[in-house]
Image 1 (cartoon, rainbow, N blue to C red):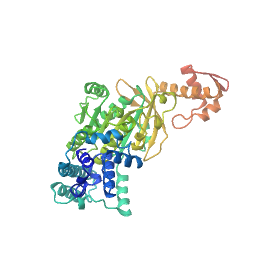
Image 2: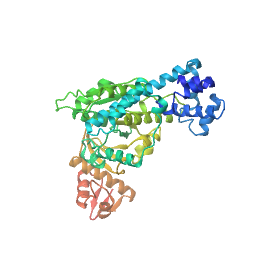
Image 3: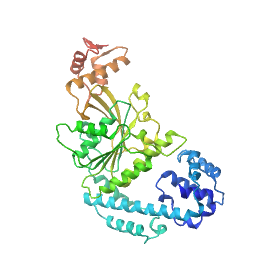
Image 4: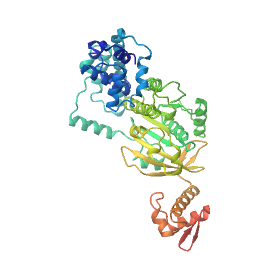
Length: 452
């Protein structure tokens, strides 16, 4: 921020002292990358760079709101950064960039060793350490190199070969083709009371129980409250989960990412993929912006980015808007930002169907089939998820029959209901529809018809 502010306040510092050292990708935040690029472009075109011109340039490129709006641009100069110190600011940016690259290279090497795929990783670590020590100039070391199709195919094969990690909920794992993978952002969206926190606790407890390092960031409940929920989830298992850390962070997304990076650095050499759990996304403070949607979008982008860079699983709860209560939850019901659905690799949309059951809609599955519905039994007090019991299954079937009868003006044939309702792996039999009527009293069956 100080470097960008100095460049805006005094255009003379944009020259060789800065541009020869700093490149776009050296900025940690995408917003800062876009601002730096716009400043350099204006300077190359011999145009003056000030807040007014820069704002217009970003607006023309449709990036003004993306970077946080005019208010964020003004905040870059609020601290009165000294233009005379711009070269020093630039050196700090370069130094931090090199440090991040070295950390990423070592984490990637650690993950590669644990998976048995080490080709090229040692050289990458050496290069990153050389850059960190200043033995390689940024201009030569950091220039992106286009990859050949053969290289990309090999990388794709390596990624495809990485095993999926089951969530431990059989029906849900089946819908996700076996589970989730490192570097994925999984978003669990639900309205208040729909089971977001319970699912977060379940994921953290399960992965920790299996030996995965896990970090639970809670923005909704206190640390001790999450710990109590974890203990309830572990009841009868006699486990203490030394791999699980719980933290209620303060500060914005920038400080949160630093916490995650420091935690991930401690996990170097871990045999199993680390897992970050965040409850919940809209509670994480983003950079100041004139748009709440943009603030939430930046948080989603940063969580996606940290998962990719560190090679970890990121599981994030997100709030759905009130409209989701009145219909089947969809991706557009994610509250305050459409960018959440773009960042997510998997989006699980939760819908409470009873006091001890939920329906999970697979709203997005970047690496598989989307659109599946999974009905689960839930012990909310213990944050446990599993298959529906017989009584829950009949109650769920009755709900679906009633929904269809309401669309048919209160009456439909059993044959029509059987053919028109998806239930479990297929369709319910007429006998099951009759059993659901007897068990729940939600509708009655007369002859070959069901009536509300």
